[in-house]
Length: 167
Image 1 (cartoon, rainbow, N blue to C red):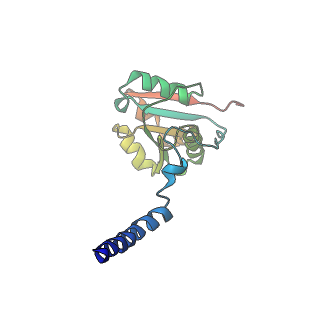
Image 2 (image 1 turned 30 degrees about the horizontal axis):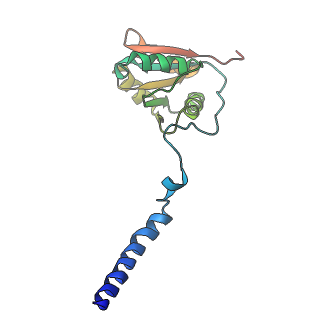
Image 3 (image 1 turned 30 degrees about the vertical axis):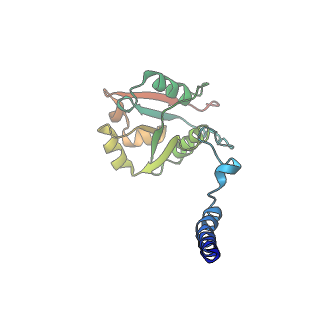
Protein backbone atom coordinates (compact mmCIF):
# COMPACT_ATOMS: atom_id res chain seq x y z
CA UNK A 1 0.00 0.00 0.00
CA UNK A 2 2.74 2.59 0.80
CA UNK A 3 4.33 1.91 -2.63
CA UNK A 4 1.04 2.76 -4.33
CA UNK A 5 0.68 6.02 -2.40
CA UNK A 6 4.32 6.92 -3.14
CA UNK A 7 3.80 6.15 -6.84
CA UNK A 8 0.62 8.30 -7.00
CA UNK A 9 2.38 11.18 -5.20
CA UNK A 10 5.38 11.09 -7.57
CA UNK A 11 3.12 10.96 -10.66
CA UNK A 12 0.94 13.78 -9.34
CA UNK A 13 4.00 15.91 -8.58
CA UNK A 14 5.35 15.29 -12.09
CA UNK A 15 2.05 16.23 -13.75
CA UNK A 16 1.76 19.35 -11.61
CA UNK A 17 5.27 20.41 -12.59
CA UNK A 18 4.47 19.85 -16.26
CA UNK A 19 1.34 21.99 -16.01
CA UNK A 20 2.08 24.61 -13.35
CA UNK A 21 5.59 25.70 -14.39
CA UNK A 22 4.71 26.54 -18.05
CA UNK A 23 1.46 28.17 -16.89
CA UNK A 24 3.35 30.36 -14.40
CA UNK A 25 6.09 31.27 -16.91
CA UNK A 26 3.49 32.33 -19.47
CA UNK A 27 1.95 34.78 -16.99
CA UNK A 28 -1.02 32.56 -16.29
CA UNK A 29 -1.24 33.73 -12.71
CA UNK A 30 -1.64 37.41 -13.63
CA UNK A 31 -5.30 37.30 -12.57
CA UNK A 32 -4.03 36.94 -8.99
CA UNK A 33 -1.82 40.02 -9.28
CA UNK A 34 -4.50 42.27 -10.76
CA UNK A 35 -3.29 42.57 -14.42
CA UNK A 36 -5.19 44.81 -16.82
CA UNK A 37 -8.92 45.01 -16.50
CA UNK A 38 -11.42 45.44 -19.30
CA UNK A 39 -12.62 48.92 -18.39
CA UNK A 40 -9.45 50.75 -17.45
CA UNK A 41 -8.34 53.32 -19.97
CA UNK A 42 -4.86 53.67 -21.34
CA UNK A 43 -2.29 55.20 -19.03
CA UNK A 44 -0.87 57.46 -21.74
CA UNK A 45 -3.22 59.62 -23.79
CA UNK A 46 -1.84 60.48 -27.22
CA UNK A 47 -2.28 64.12 -28.27
CA UNK A 48 -4.46 64.95 -31.25
CA UNK A 49 -2.59 65.99 -34.39
CA UNK A 50 -3.17 69.40 -35.93
CA UNK A 51 -5.36 69.76 -38.98
CA UNK A 52 -8.90 69.09 -40.11
CA UNK A 53 -10.38 65.61 -40.08
CA UNK A 54 -13.66 63.92 -40.83
CA UNK A 55 -15.04 61.05 -38.78
CA UNK A 56 -17.61 58.90 -40.59
CA UNK A 57 -19.94 56.68 -38.57
CA UNK A 58 -21.98 54.01 -40.33
CA UNK A 59 -25.44 54.25 -38.73
CA UNK A 60 -26.35 50.77 -40.00
CA UNK A 61 -23.78 49.31 -37.60
CA UNK A 62 -24.91 51.39 -34.62
CA UNK A 63 -28.64 50.90 -34.08
CA UNK A 64 -28.67 51.96 -30.41
CA UNK A 65 -29.32 55.72 -30.41
CA UNK A 66 -27.79 56.32 -26.97
CA UNK A 67 -24.52 54.63 -28.00
CA UNK A 68 -24.54 56.58 -31.27
CA UNK A 69 -25.02 59.84 -29.35
CA UNK A 70 -22.20 58.85 -27.00
CA UNK A 71 -19.88 58.23 -29.97
CA UNK A 72 -20.83 61.64 -31.38
CA UNK A 73 -19.95 63.25 -28.05
CA UNK A 74 -16.70 61.26 -27.83
CA UNK A 75 -15.46 62.18 -31.32
CA UNK A 76 -16.55 65.80 -30.86
CA UNK A 77 -14.24 66.07 -27.87
CA UNK A 78 -16.89 66.33 -25.19
CA UNK A 79 -17.34 64.44 -21.96
CA UNK A 80 -18.74 60.96 -22.43
CA UNK A 81 -20.08 58.23 -20.24
CA UNK A 82 -19.05 54.60 -20.52
CA UNK A 83 -19.88 53.32 -24.00
CA UNK A 84 -20.76 49.63 -24.21
CA UNK A 85 -20.08 49.40 -27.92
CA UNK A 86 -16.85 48.14 -29.51
CA UNK A 87 -15.79 49.73 -32.77
CA UNK A 88 -13.43 49.21 -35.65
CA UNK A 89 -12.00 52.42 -37.06
CA UNK A 90 -10.34 52.38 -40.46
CA UNK A 91 -7.93 54.93 -41.91
CA UNK A 92 -6.49 55.22 -45.39
CA UNK A 93 -2.97 54.03 -46.09
CA UNK A 94 -0.63 57.02 -46.20
CA UNK A 95 -2.98 59.25 -44.23
CA UNK A 96 -0.68 59.57 -41.21
CA UNK A 97 -2.62 62.41 -39.59
CA UNK A 98 -5.81 60.36 -39.58
CA UNK A 99 -3.95 57.36 -38.17
CA UNK A 100 -2.49 59.51 -35.39
CA UNK A 101 -5.94 60.93 -34.62
CA UNK A 102 -7.41 57.41 -34.51
CA UNK A 103 -4.64 56.33 -32.14
CA UNK A 104 -5.34 59.42 -30.02
CA UNK A 105 -9.02 58.48 -29.77
CA UNK A 106 -8.10 54.86 -29.04
CA UNK A 107 -5.83 55.97 -26.17
CA UNK A 108 -8.82 57.63 -24.47
CA UNK A 109 -10.91 54.43 -24.46
CA UNK A 110 -10.69 51.24 -22.43
CA UNK A 111 -8.30 48.64 -23.77
CA UNK A 112 -9.55 46.74 -26.85
CA UNK A 113 -12.72 48.82 -27.26
CA UNK A 114 -11.46 50.42 -30.47
CA UNK A 115 -9.56 48.54 -33.13
CA UNK A 116 -7.65 50.73 -35.60
CA UNK A 117 -6.83 49.38 -39.05
CA UNK A 118 -5.27 50.94 -42.12
CA UNK A 119 -6.26 49.88 -45.61
CA UNK A 120 -5.46 50.63 -49.21
CA UNK A 121 -7.22 53.89 -50.05
CA UNK A 122 -9.06 52.76 -53.19
CA UNK A 123 -10.14 49.40 -51.75
CA UNK A 124 -11.17 50.90 -48.40
CA UNK A 125 -13.22 53.66 -50.02
CA UNK A 126 -14.84 51.15 -52.35
CA UNK A 127 -15.91 49.08 -49.35
CA UNK A 128 -17.10 52.19 -47.56
CA UNK A 129 -19.27 53.26 -50.49
CA UNK A 130 -21.09 49.96 -50.10
CA UNK A 131 -21.53 50.41 -46.35
CA UNK A 132 -18.84 47.92 -45.35
CA UNK A 133 -17.21 49.96 -42.59
CA UNK A 134 -17.89 50.75 -38.97
CA UNK A 135 -16.12 54.08 -38.50
CA UNK A 136 -13.60 55.90 -40.64
CA UNK A 137 -11.27 58.82 -39.99
CA UNK A 138 -9.98 60.78 -42.98
CA UNK A 139 -7.87 63.94 -43.09
CA UNK A 140 -9.10 66.92 -45.12
CA UNK A 141 -6.29 66.40 -47.65
CA UNK A 142 -7.11 62.72 -48.20
CA UNK A 143 -10.85 63.49 -48.34
CA UNK A 144 -10.21 65.99 -51.11
CA UNK A 145 -7.75 63.74 -52.94
CA UNK A 146 -9.98 60.64 -52.96
CA UNK A 147 -13.42 62.27 -53.08
CA UNK A 148 -14.68 60.98 -49.76
CA UNK A 149 -17.90 62.99 -50.24
CA UNK A 150 -19.23 60.08 -52.33
CA UNK A 151 -19.13 57.80 -49.27
CA UNK A 152 -21.57 59.75 -47.18
CA UNK A 153 -23.50 61.77 -49.74
CA UNK A 154 -27.11 60.60 -49.39
CA UNK A 155 -26.21 57.51 -47.37
CA UNK A 156 -26.90 56.44 -43.80
CA UNK A 157 -23.61 57.88 -42.52
CA UNK A 158 -23.06 60.46 -39.78
CA UNK A 159 -20.27 62.96 -40.35
CA UNK A 160 -18.33 64.65 -37.55
CA UNK A 161 -15.81 67.37 -38.32
CA UNK A 162 -12.78 67.33 -36.02
CA UNK A 163 -10.86 70.60 -36.19
CA UNK A 164 -7.58 71.56 -34.61
CA UNK A 165 -8.17 73.79 -31.58
CA UNK A 166 -5.48 76.23 -32.78
CA UNK A 167 -6.93 76.52 -36.28
